[in-house]
Length: 464
Ligand code: GLN
Image (cartoon, rainbow, N blue to C red; front, side, top):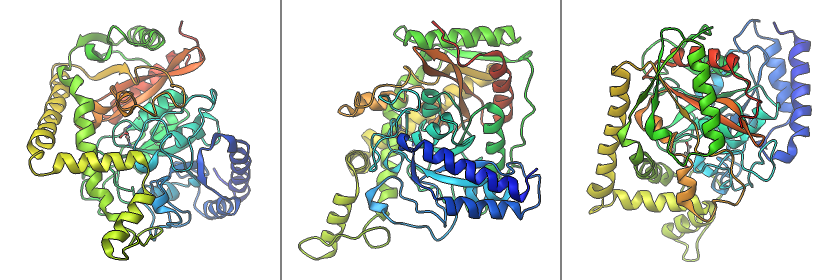
């Protein structure tokens, strides 16, 4: 229950925490006045909302009227949206305080936040390491205890991967479960607003609040919103598949040890465990890095210096020069790389060789999942990432190495099915995440099982 004083106290406390965590560089905008306005609004609401006076940070690609939305890009400097994203409207209606806009890789392209135009986010406990990306600011704010929950976005793992690196819970819903209205588009057939929570219960509650059909997003599925799942005490009656392609011989030993422990916990809770195969897994990264840039190249055409952000007039003074100067100055190197790759794979002569082939491969990856679920698996359990958080700078000169950090998270994104990362232990102090993957629209099964695993695992324990 919230009282006027409670919400005000939450706003002040959140302001103190944001100030204390300024070194993380996890925030792109916040103000105490804005937090106090949020508190006053919540205090005037009927009590008992699902997120009554809960402060929530939003990744800076989710538009809000009251704060700027930059997508961590110079091209959107100073942009303030004339409308709120549906997820922001839903959070507010549930009593949440929108606390801050979080740093990220520019336009959500990256796995480390090193592609932010405003500098990278520091890992909350290991400042020389990255927090993961692209929603690294949101993940770091939850891990550092600044807010109990945050929203990020997933195109190909951008919530699960930083959740794993930072030691928090990250939940990607089914494509179509949550409205994309007001989420700045990257790869529209992949993009999902996704929640971080300090624990499974919090992430479940946020996911439930933001879910449901939306007349403003025709790709949302017309099914009732997710209800907050009743956590399971055990996993009796569930069959959990372990896809062998996600446990390669050269898997990081700490990651393997954390997964062994999670598998043992699942068995002790009564789950049946069996090895399965998803043979097209090896094609997920190349497929994703064709489909996502293709869609990005089309979506980012709108940043032309006419409608959004700062305008640069090129030397020739004509409209082409305006586009060239605005886009050349406004976009960072990774965004430019994606636009070039995307334009290339869609161009006449290369479309069949790349884009069409990638679409076919995407269908096969989706079929792999469909088959193992049809053959009796209720859920799949895998590592979220092949290694714990890597060092800043380690992969910035090698885009392919950076792309490979997404190897275990891309497949579920391509298939549009729900998946989440759950803290599963630490190795050398660095958090390691276990990933659960569920059939389409079976978020409740996944979240209920995650709650049982969470209570059986000491996520702060060293695993080897
Ligand atoms: N790391 C992936 C990429 O760079 C995923 C990004 C995302 O999910 N937004 O595209």
